[in-house]
Length: 205
Image 1 (cartoon, rainbow, N blue to C red):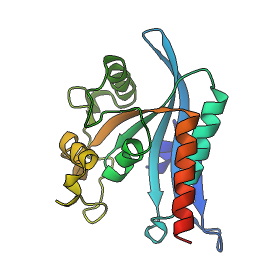
Image 2: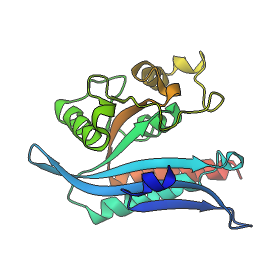
Image 3: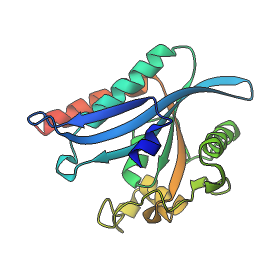
């Protein structure tokens, strides 16, 4: 599955244990250019992300992803950059809802037509018939699902608007269904994300 996912990716964030140098996690990414209705833009697409359980909660992957976003935006200063994300876990969706001022879909606003069409175009291009354009969901179940005891959504969590929205839009996320999302990347956002994760790291000592 890793090699299949890697075929159309351009980069890998590789996480290693500092003491042993053992590989303890990775995340695959790719960047490419597209045009919709005469508007050029850059796409960052996240592929598989896997981290050993003992290393959950650490911030190194986050900081490296922020560096990746910064590098991409600096390389394309005058072209809009979007993170195209598919999410079968609410925590990944929260990276958008709690860090990106402009992201879609969201609980408080309807998705504008251009962004909706871009999501559909990118998802159809990559996933073909597995993409349900009406629901905005990649509805395959063979690629892998979130384990039952990993990031479950409890009743208390559903009081949060963004978590409740994700659960409602992607009710079969536990089966491996992915919600297709789009977030606008600019330097202000990535710098704010970097500062937030530095503060969290300091709090943890």
